[in-house]
Image 1 (tube, protein in one colour):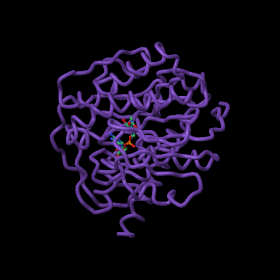
Image 2 (tube, rainbow, N blue to C red):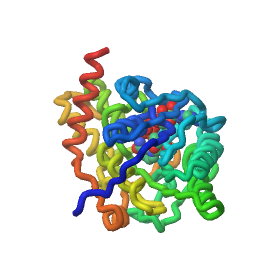
Image 3 (cartoon, helix red, strand yellow):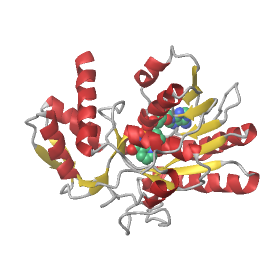
Image 4 (cartoon, rainbow, N blue to C red):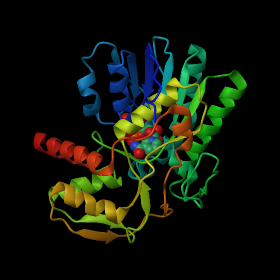
Length: 321
Ligand code: NAD
Protein backbone atom coordinates (compact mmCIF):
# COMPACT_ATOMS: atom_id res chain seq x y z
CA UNK A 1 0.00 0.00 0.00
CA UNK A 2 1.43 3.42 -0.98
CA UNK A 3 1.31 6.17 1.63
CA UNK A 4 -1.71 8.45 1.57
CA UNK A 5 -1.42 11.45 -0.70
CA UNK A 6 -0.79 14.83 0.86
CA UNK A 7 -0.98 18.47 -0.17
CA UNK A 8 0.35 21.70 1.28
CA UNK A 9 -2.32 24.05 2.61
CA UNK A 10 -1.80 27.75 3.33
CA UNK A 11 -4.73 28.41 5.63
CA UNK A 12 -7.26 25.90 6.90
CA UNK A 13 -10.48 26.73 8.73
CA UNK A 14 -11.52 23.90 11.07
CA UNK A 15 -15.03 24.24 12.47
CA UNK A 16 -15.36 22.21 15.65
CA UNK A 17 -11.57 22.46 16.03
CA UNK A 18 -11.71 22.34 19.83
CA UNK A 19 -13.43 18.96 19.74
CA UNK A 20 -11.87 15.53 19.84
CA UNK A 21 -11.22 14.91 16.12
CA UNK A 22 -11.02 18.63 15.24
CA UNK A 23 -8.18 19.33 17.67
CA UNK A 24 -6.10 16.47 16.23
CA UNK A 25 -6.77 17.92 12.76
CA UNK A 26 -5.69 21.41 13.86
CA UNK A 27 -2.45 20.00 15.25
CA UNK A 28 -1.72 17.90 12.15
CA UNK A 29 -2.31 20.88 9.86
CA UNK A 30 -0.10 23.19 11.97
CA UNK A 31 2.60 20.49 11.98
CA UNK A 32 2.36 20.43 8.18
CA UNK A 33 2.99 24.19 8.03
CA UNK A 34 -0.55 25.54 7.50
CA UNK A 35 -2.08 28.46 9.36
CA UNK A 36 -5.21 27.24 11.15
CA UNK A 37 -8.34 29.06 12.26
CA UNK A 38 -10.39 27.00 14.68
CA UNK A 39 -14.02 28.10 14.90
CA UNK A 40 -15.81 26.56 17.86
CA UNK A 41 -18.57 27.51 20.28
CA UNK A 42 -17.18 25.12 22.92
CA UNK A 43 -20.62 23.50 23.29
CA UNK A 44 -19.11 20.01 23.44
CA UNK A 45 -15.40 20.72 22.90
CA UNK A 46 -12.67 20.69 25.53
CA UNK A 47 -10.70 23.94 25.77
CA UNK A 48 -7.82 21.78 27.05
CA UNK A 49 -7.67 20.12 23.61
CA UNK A 50 -6.46 23.33 21.98
CA UNK A 51 -4.63 24.85 24.95
CA UNK A 52 -1.26 23.53 23.66
CA UNK A 53 -1.97 25.10 20.23
CA UNK A 54 -2.84 28.62 21.41
CA UNK A 55 0.79 29.78 21.49
CA UNK A 56 1.76 28.23 18.18
CA UNK A 57 2.38 30.64 15.30
CA UNK A 58 -0.45 30.59 12.77
CA UNK A 59 -3.12 29.28 15.16
CA UNK A 60 -6.24 31.38 15.79
CA UNK A 61 -9.27 30.49 17.90
CA UNK A 62 -12.58 32.14 17.03
CA UNK A 63 -15.38 31.40 19.48
CA UNK A 64 -18.60 31.39 17.46
CA UNK A 65 -21.68 29.30 16.73
CA UNK A 66 -21.27 28.32 13.04
CA UNK A 67 -25.04 27.99 12.66
CA UNK A 68 -25.22 31.76 13.22
CA UNK A 69 -21.96 33.14 11.86
CA UNK A 70 -18.58 32.09 10.54
CA UNK A 71 -16.34 35.10 11.14
CA UNK A 72 -13.02 34.41 9.43
CA UNK A 73 -10.78 37.33 8.42
CA UNK A 74 -8.27 35.59 6.19
CA UNK A 75 -9.20 33.66 3.03
CA UNK A 76 -8.79 29.89 3.54
CA UNK A 77 -7.82 27.35 0.88
CA UNK A 78 -9.30 24.52 2.97
CA UNK A 79 -12.49 24.40 5.06
CA UNK A 80 -12.98 21.33 7.25
CA UNK A 81 -16.51 21.36 8.64
CA UNK A 82 -16.33 19.27 11.82
CA UNK A 83 -18.58 21.26 14.16
CA UNK A 84 -21.40 19.09 15.52
CA UNK A 85 -22.19 17.33 18.74
CA UNK A 86 -21.14 13.74 18.00
CA UNK A 87 -21.75 11.54 21.01
CA UNK A 88 -25.30 10.31 21.61
CA UNK A 89 -25.25 11.84 25.10
CA UNK A 90 -24.45 15.25 23.56
CA UNK A 91 -26.87 15.24 20.65
CA UNK A 92 -29.72 13.92 22.77
CA UNK A 93 -29.04 16.81 25.19
CA UNK A 94 -28.70 19.32 22.30
CA UNK A 95 -31.19 18.11 19.65
CA UNK A 96 -32.05 21.43 17.98
CA UNK A 97 -28.51 22.76 18.22
CA UNK A 98 -27.36 19.57 16.47
CA UNK A 99 -29.85 20.07 13.64
CA UNK A 100 -28.99 23.79 13.29
CA UNK A 101 -25.28 22.98 13.14
CA UNK A 102 -25.82 20.29 10.50
CA UNK A 103 -28.07 22.53 8.39
CA UNK A 104 -27.34 26.28 8.80
CA UNK A 105 -23.81 25.55 10.03
CA UNK A 106 -23.03 23.41 6.99
CA UNK A 107 -24.55 26.06 4.71
CA UNK A 108 -22.34 28.77 6.26
CA UNK A 109 -19.22 26.61 5.96
CA UNK A 110 -20.05 25.82 2.31
CA UNK A 111 -20.58 29.53 1.55
CA UNK A 112 -17.19 30.37 3.07
CA UNK A 113 -15.52 27.65 0.98
CA UNK A 114 -17.29 28.71 -2.22
CA UNK A 115 -16.54 32.43 -1.78
CA UNK A 116 -12.90 31.62 -0.96
CA UNK A 117 -12.55 29.05 -3.76
CA UNK A 118 -11.38 26.66 -1.05
CA UNK A 119 -11.60 22.89 -0.84
CA UNK A 120 -14.46 21.86 1.48
CA UNK A 121 -14.63 18.67 3.54
CA UNK A 122 -17.80 17.64 5.36
CA UNK A 123 -17.42 15.39 8.40
CA UNK A 124 -20.25 12.96 7.82
CA UNK A 125 -20.69 9.74 9.71
CA UNK A 126 -21.40 6.03 9.52
CA UNK A 127 -24.67 6.99 11.28
CA UNK A 128 -26.05 7.87 7.83
CA UNK A 129 -26.29 4.07 7.39
CA UNK A 130 -28.54 3.89 10.51
CA UNK A 131 -29.15 0.33 11.70
CA UNK A 132 -27.69 -1.22 8.54
CA UNK A 133 -29.18 -4.19 6.77
CA UNK A 134 -25.93 -4.75 4.91
CA UNK A 135 -22.60 -5.51 6.55
CA UNK A 136 -19.98 -4.22 5.87
CA UNK A 137 -21.34 -0.92 4.54
CA UNK A 138 -19.97 0.51 1.32
CA UNK A 139 -20.68 4.03 0.07
CA UNK A 140 -23.43 2.88 -2.31
CA UNK A 141 -25.61 1.66 0.59
CA UNK A 142 -28.43 4.16 1.32
CA UNK A 143 -28.95 3.19 4.93
CA UNK A 144 -31.77 2.30 7.28
CA UNK A 145 -32.55 5.36 9.40
CA UNK A 146 -35.58 6.03 11.59
CA UNK A 147 -36.40 9.68 10.70
CA UNK A 148 -38.30 10.35 13.94
CA UNK A 149 -36.37 8.22 16.45
CA UNK A 150 -34.25 9.84 19.17
CA UNK A 151 -31.03 9.46 17.14
CA UNK A 152 -32.59 11.09 14.07
CA UNK A 153 -31.46 14.59 15.11
CA UNK A 154 -27.90 13.53 14.41
CA UNK A 155 -28.40 10.98 11.61
CA UNK A 156 -30.74 13.18 9.60
CA UNK A 157 -28.70 16.36 10.19
CA UNK A 158 -25.73 14.54 8.67
CA UNK A 159 -27.80 13.15 5.80
CA UNK A 160 -29.12 16.67 5.14
CA UNK A 161 -25.53 17.98 5.31
CA UNK A 162 -24.52 15.46 2.64
CA UNK A 163 -27.44 16.51 0.41
CA UNK A 164 -26.62 20.20 0.93
CA UNK A 165 -22.95 19.63 0.12
CA UNK A 166 -23.90 17.76 -3.05
CA UNK A 167 -26.35 20.52 -4.08
CA UNK A 168 -23.69 23.20 -3.47
CA UNK A 169 -21.19 21.35 -5.66
CA UNK A 170 -23.80 20.91 -8.40
CA UNK A 171 -25.13 24.49 -8.22
CA UNK A 172 -21.97 26.54 -7.67
CA UNK A 173 -19.19 24.12 -8.57
CA UNK A 174 -17.89 24.24 -4.98
CA UNK A 175 -14.94 21.87 -4.56
CA UNK A 176 -16.45 19.51 -2.00
CA UNK A 177 -15.65 16.18 -0.38
CA UNK A 178 -17.77 14.08 1.99
CA UNK A 179 -15.97 11.79 4.44
CA UNK A 180 -18.07 9.26 6.34
CA UNK A 181 -16.20 8.67 9.58
CA UNK A 182 -16.75 5.48 11.55
CA UNK A 183 -16.24 5.28 15.33
CA UNK A 184 -12.97 6.97 16.22
CA UNK A 185 -11.25 6.94 19.61
CA UNK A 186 -8.09 8.20 21.24
CA UNK A 187 -6.62 10.90 23.47
CA UNK A 188 -8.73 14.06 23.82
CA UNK A 189 -12.11 12.38 24.37
CA UNK A 190 -14.16 13.31 27.41
CA UNK A 191 -14.51 10.46 29.91
CA UNK A 192 -18.18 11.25 30.37
CA UNK A 193 -19.16 11.80 26.72
CA UNK A 194 -21.08 8.51 26.73
CA UNK A 195 -19.16 6.78 23.91
CA UNK A 196 -18.01 3.23 24.56
CA UNK A 197 -14.22 3.61 24.61
CA UNK A 198 -13.92 6.59 27.00
CA UNK A 199 -16.68 5.17 29.20
CA UNK A 200 -15.00 1.77 29.50
CA UNK A 201 -11.53 3.25 30.02
CA UNK A 202 -12.75 5.66 32.71
CA UNK A 203 -14.63 2.87 34.47
CA UNK A 204 -11.73 0.40 34.24
CA UNK A 205 -9.24 2.93 35.64
CA UNK A 206 -11.61 3.80 38.51
CA UNK A 207 -12.20 0.11 39.31
CA UNK A 208 -15.93 0.55 38.57
CA UNK A 209 -18.05 -2.00 36.66
CA UNK A 210 -17.97 -1.54 32.87
CA UNK A 211 -21.51 -0.80 31.71
CA UNK A 212 -22.18 -2.86 28.58
CA UNK A 213 -25.52 -2.18 26.88
CA UNK A 214 -27.83 -5.04 25.91
CA UNK A 215 -26.10 -8.41 25.68
CA UNK A 216 -22.91 -6.76 24.38
CA UNK A 217 -22.99 -8.67 21.09
CA UNK A 218 -23.54 -5.51 19.00
CA UNK A 219 -20.40 -4.63 17.06
CA UNK A 220 -18.52 -1.48 16.16
CA UNK A 221 -15.36 -0.90 14.18
CA UNK A 222 -12.98 1.36 16.04
CA UNK A 223 -10.44 3.56 14.30
CA UNK A 224 -7.57 5.19 16.18
CA UNK A 225 -7.67 8.97 15.80
CA UNK A 226 -4.27 9.30 14.07
CA UNK A 227 -5.53 6.96 11.33
CA UNK A 228 -8.81 8.88 10.99
CA UNK A 229 -6.91 12.18 10.68
CA UNK A 230 -4.56 10.83 7.99
CA UNK A 231 -7.59 9.52 6.07
CA UNK A 232 -9.37 12.88 6.27
CA UNK A 233 -6.27 14.76 5.10
CA UNK A 234 -5.75 12.28 2.26
CA UNK A 235 -9.35 12.85 1.15
CA UNK A 236 -8.84 16.63 1.40
CA UNK A 237 -5.68 16.42 -0.72
CA UNK A 238 -7.35 14.27 -3.37
CA UNK A 239 -9.89 15.76 -5.76
CA UNK A 240 -12.34 13.01 -4.70
CA UNK A 241 -15.89 14.19 -4.04
CA UNK A 242 -16.96 11.11 -2.11
CA UNK A 243 -18.70 10.09 -0.04
CA UNK A 244 -15.78 7.99 1.14
CA UNK A 245 -15.74 5.75 4.22
CA UNK A 246 -12.91 6.37 6.68
CA UNK A 247 -12.81 3.72 9.38
CA UNK A 248 -11.14 0.58 10.59
CA UNK A 249 -12.76 -2.56 9.17
CA UNK A 250 -11.83 -4.79 12.11
CA UNK A 251 -15.11 -5.29 13.94
CA UNK A 252 -15.36 -5.94 17.67
CA UNK A 253 -18.33 -6.69 19.93
CA UNK A 254 -18.94 -4.33 22.83
CA UNK A 255 -18.46 -7.17 25.31
CA UNK A 256 -15.11 -8.13 23.75
CA UNK A 257 -14.10 -4.44 23.81
CA UNK A 258 -14.98 -4.16 27.51
CA UNK A 259 -12.90 -7.26 28.32
CA UNK A 260 -9.96 -6.00 26.25
CA UNK A 261 -10.00 -2.61 28.04
CA UNK A 262 -10.08 -4.33 31.45
CA UNK A 263 -7.12 -6.52 30.48
CA UNK A 264 -5.04 -3.69 28.98
CA UNK A 265 -5.73 -1.39 31.94
CA UNK A 266 -4.74 -4.13 34.40
CA UNK A 267 -8.10 -3.54 36.09
CA UNK A 268 -10.20 -5.87 38.22
CA UNK A 269 -13.50 -4.30 37.09
CA UNK A 270 -16.42 -6.54 36.21
CA UNK A 271 -19.00 -6.13 33.47
CA UNK A 272 -22.51 -4.86 34.31
CA UNK A 273 -25.23 -5.13 31.68
CA UNK A 274 -27.54 -2.13 31.24
CA UNK A 275 -30.43 -1.32 28.90
CA UNK A 276 -29.61 -0.85 25.24
CA UNK A 277 -30.51 2.59 23.77
CA UNK A 278 -33.41 2.88 21.28
CA UNK A 279 -32.36 2.34 17.61
CA UNK A 280 -28.82 1.36 18.62
CA UNK A 281 -27.29 -0.27 15.51
CA UNK A 282 -26.57 -4.01 15.78
CA UNK A 283 -23.54 -3.97 13.49
CA UNK A 284 -21.23 -1.33 12.08
CA UNK A 285 -18.27 -2.03 9.80
CA UNK A 286 -16.86 0.01 6.92
CA UNK A 287 -15.98 -1.29 3.50
CA UNK A 288 -12.88 0.84 2.82
CA UNK A 289 -12.13 -0.37 -0.71
CA UNK A 290 -12.70 3.12 -2.12
CA UNK A 291 -10.32 4.81 0.37
CA UNK A 292 -7.70 2.11 -0.25
CA UNK A 293 -7.96 2.37 -4.04
CA UNK A 294 -8.29 6.14 -4.48
CA UNK A 295 -6.43 7.55 -1.49
CA UNK A 296 -3.87 4.82 -0.81
CA UNK A 297 -5.12 4.96 2.78
CA UNK A 298 -5.83 2.29 5.31
CA UNK A 299 -5.63 2.26 9.11
CA UNK A 300 -2.30 1.26 10.64
CA UNK A 301 -2.94 1.25 14.39
CA UNK A 302 -4.47 -1.96 15.76
CA UNK A 303 -7.00 -2.05 18.60
CA UNK A 304 -4.54 -3.14 21.30
CA UNK A 305 -2.00 -0.46 20.44
CA UNK A 306 -4.64 2.28 20.08
CA UNK A 307 -6.35 1.32 23.32
CA UNK A 308 -3.02 1.21 25.16
CA UNK A 309 -2.24 4.78 24.03
CA UNK A 310 -5.75 5.90 24.99
CA UNK A 311 -5.57 4.26 28.42
CA UNK A 312 -2.14 5.87 29.03
CA UNK A 313 -3.58 9.26 28.13
CA UNK A 314 -6.62 8.87 30.41
CA UNK A 315 -4.34 7.71 33.24
CA UNK A 316 -2.09 10.77 32.79
CA UNK A 317 -5.16 13.07 32.69
CA UNK A 318 -6.49 11.55 35.92
CA UNK A 319 -3.08 12.06 37.57
CA UNK A 320 -3.13 15.73 36.49
CA UNK A 321 -6.52 16.01 38.22
P1 NAD B 1 -16.75 16.62 19.60
O1 NAD B 1 -18.05 16.86 20.29
O2 NAD B 1 -15.57 16.29 20.44
O3 NAD B 1 -16.36 17.88 18.71
C1 NAD B 1 -17.30 18.68 18.06
C2 NAD B 1 -16.88 20.13 18.21
O4 NAD B 1 -17.82 20.96 17.52
C3 NAD B 1 -16.87 20.60 19.66
O5 NAD B 1 -15.64 21.26 19.95
C4 NAD B 1 -18.04 21.55 19.76
O6 NAD B 1 -17.86 22.55 20.74
C5 NAD B 1 -18.12 22.09 18.34
N1 NAD B 1 -19.44 22.58 17.95
C6 NAD B 1 -20.63 21.92 18.05
N2 NAD B 1 -21.62 22.70 17.54
C7 NAD B 1 -21.04 23.85 17.13
C8 NAD B 1 -21.53 25.04 16.53
N3 NAD B 1 -22.84 25.20 16.22
N4 NAD B 1 -20.66 26.03 16.24
C9 NAD B 1 -19.33 25.89 16.53
N5 NAD B 1 -18.81 24.79 17.09
C10 NAD B 1 -19.65 23.78 17.39
O7 NAD B 1 -17.01 15.49 18.51
P2 NAD B 1 -15.95 14.68 17.62
O8 NAD B 1 -16.01 13.27 18.02
O9 NAD B 1 -14.66 15.37 17.60
O10 NAD B 1 -16.64 14.79 16.18
C11 NAD B 1 -16.21 15.79 15.26
C12 NAD B 1 -16.95 15.64 13.96
O11 NAD B 1 -16.69 14.35 13.39
C13 NAD B 1 -18.47 15.75 14.10
O12 NAD B 1 -18.99 16.45 12.98
C14 NAD B 1 -18.93 14.33 14.10
O13 NAD B 1 -20.24 14.21 13.61
C15 NAD B 1 -17.91 13.67 13.18
N6 NAD B 1 -17.76 12.25 13.48
C16 NAD B 1 -17.07 11.83 14.58
C17 NAD B 1 -16.96 10.48 14.84
C18 NAD B 1 -16.21 9.95 16.04
O14 NAD B 1 -16.17 8.73 16.25
N7 NAD B 1 -15.58 10.78 16.84
C19 NAD B 1 -17.57 9.54 13.98
C20 NAD B 1 -18.28 10.01 12.91
C21 NAD B 1 -18.36 11.37 12.65
